[in-house]
Image (cartoon, helix red, strand yellow):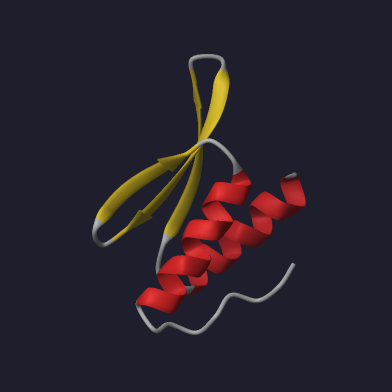
Length: 66
């Protein structure tokens, strides 16, 4: 998981976003922040799916594969 989190964080940074992991209520949530605000996710799968979607919608370069 750590490698995947680092990879997603690097990809987010490369697209001008920030990926944070927060410990809340005895669980970890992931927060993707950009110029439009913050979105919370329960899993890294959800984060990756949203990031790929944002790249397509905003016509940004696609994410690299892990």
